[in-house]
Amino acid sequence: MLRFANDHYFMLLLLLPLFIVFYWRVFRWKTRAMQRFGNLELIKKLTASVSRGRQVLKASLLVTVLFCMTLALTRPQIGTRLEEVKREGVDIFVALDVSTSMLAEDIKPSRLDKAKHEISTFVDLLRGDRIGLIAFAGDAFVQCPLTLDYGAAKTFLDIMDPSLLPEPGTNLSAAIRTAMKSFESQERKHKVLVLITDGEDHGDDVLKMAEAADREGVVLYTVGIGSPKGVPIPVYDKYGNKEFKKDRKGEVILTKLDQLTLEKLALLTGGKYYQSVTGETRLEMIYDEISKMEKKELASRKFSQYEDRFQYILGFAIMLLLLEIFLSERLKTTHEWRGRFE
Image 1 (cartoon, rainbow, N blue to C red):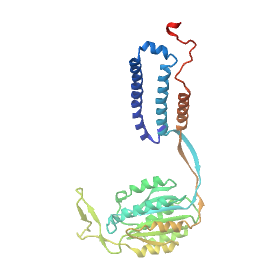
Image 2: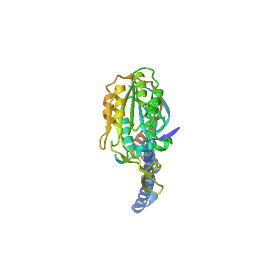
Image 3: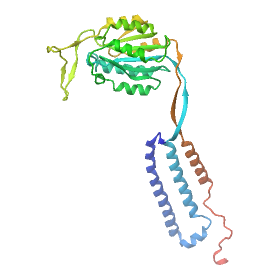
Image 4: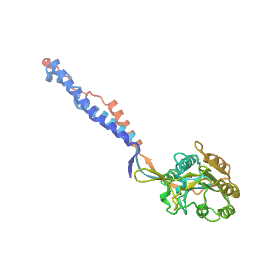
């Protein structure tokens, strides 16, 4: 399969017609100049050693060199090459609460947007660690399995929102259980779960699930996002009008951060609790903690990569340029024209 890494350089090909017109006008100007100087046939005999054909050939070579140089700049690539990548790090799952309570705007622009920004920044910090994503609300599922492809992880992160899980609520137990099942290693180390939520748990006994995670060697870091004070959950209609979510009695539902539960979860597994606030990125602190953990050699991953082919085109262009430089416009003549003295 052929592709061009820098295809925007194809715009330079628009210069080719200008060069062709330029040389055409130069040759016409030379012809007219000789006509003004004297009899054209006589001048051609006097300048028989100068080859118009070679002049045209040299101009054609320069235009071809320009075309090849432009093609080389576009970096044509073809085929694939398999490379083996070995890295050391830990396995990290980030479980993101995508329940409707995360749409609260006590942290601008919203709790969910703030959390996604922090996760994206966290992924940029990773060096050899595998990252996976779990989305949870009333239930949980793996949005992105453990991977070394950080770009793919960010792509999956972008589409995480409340529409992924129609089941309402915030089931922290489901998030921890899903992570425990998704870690590939059977070792009781090298496993980290980062839980980002507003902490309003509506599931089973989450503390017992945290104890089970600790027995499996999972270190749990919790990030509380939002305000401990109750705030309403915004709801927008199709016209963009803002309202607030209400219960069956018509009263506005308030959501607030449950810090106590999150602190207990982290304490049970040897992790730490952080509260995310506007303007600060708590996941950077978590990465500092993770970077101190013992590393392991993760499963090597093979990936395909296109190979550059511009070198051949560039080499061909250089050969043509050298040919143009050493190609003389003059021919070797065996007879000298002597006019009427012959």
